Every structure is written in structure tokens, then in C-alpha cells.
Length: 208
Image (tube, rainbow, N blue to C red; front, side, top):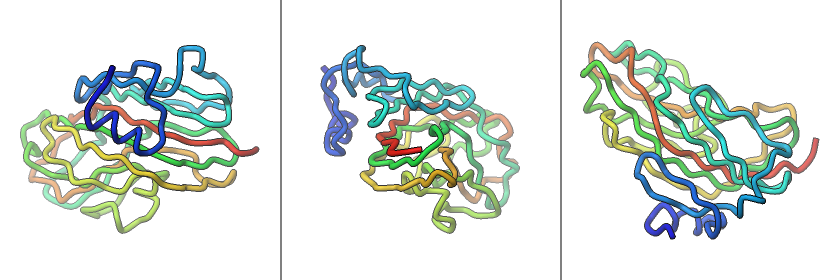
């Protein structure tokens, strides 16, 4: 049975952690989350992004979506300036959505050796981060699912956070979920950095 901070955070948010094993790939933690195998659902589920796999627990109304991001490419970072970028990890199904809780354990891994010590602002939002900005808080939708956290580095250390929220997404609004990153990047940047980790979304579809 899983123990530790990861499990406690989800329990504190009201997410069931009693029955089905999920592994947080950034920490190796095995977590029991969201129901028995019979409770895996294909009803009213969303779509995972490229290099992202989704396991959907729930009943077609209430969902626990566990996303595993496996060495996805961070958009190119030119370096030597402020820059915000985003990566699509999930798209909710059409209809009225309410996001109740979110968790992330996400790590950025540099490749070119320039941004190793950078400590970017990372979070989850419904709009992809962009522009000459060093933090996500200047645009609400860059971090309206999970507020930006300061990563320890870009050398594989996960930024871990959980939040209880009530985000209403009307039918006509953006249904996308982006892992967003912003920083004043070290010179030369990195065109080959990757991101990996686990994201858990607890949400409801309340109508068409």
C-alpha cells in the first residue's frame, strides 16, 4: 500500500486512494487511486497529448484522470531572455466541465548543458503559455488549474504540488490542459530538453 506525501496530498483533496495502483514515474511511488479495475471508464473521457498516456477512473460523470508524461519534448528555448512555453497534456471532452483538484509531479531534463541550474515557474493552465515573460502569473489562464511552482532545476528534479480548486469550464471555453513553463533562461538555452512526470486531474462533466 502506498505511503508518503503523494498519497496524503491526494487524500487531503478528497481523491480516493484506496484501490487501484498507479506509479508516479518521477518518484517511483506506488499509489492506490480511484477505484478498482472495474471502475476504469471510457465514458465522457478526454484525449491525452502526444507522449502522454491517460488512465481514466470514474463513472462518466466524476473522473480521476491519471496522466503519465514520458520524455516529451519541451518547446525550443532560445536562451538569454525571458520566454514562456507550453505543452498540451490533455483535452477534456466537449461539454460543461468542473475541475475540482489537480496534482503534478513534473521534471524538466536539460540536454545541452546550458539551463541545468535554471529554476523556471511551472504550472497547469487551459491556455498554452507564450510570450516574453519570466513567470506564469501575468496571464490567469497560464496557471488556472494549478498555480505556478518554482522548479528546483532543469536537471530532472520534479516540481511537486497539489491544489483544491473549483474551475468552471463552460462548453464554449478552452478544454485544453497545458503544462506551462516560464523563466528568464540562461544563455544559449536548450533545443532538446524533455519533460516527464505524473499529473492527476479530478473533474466532473456536468452537461453538454
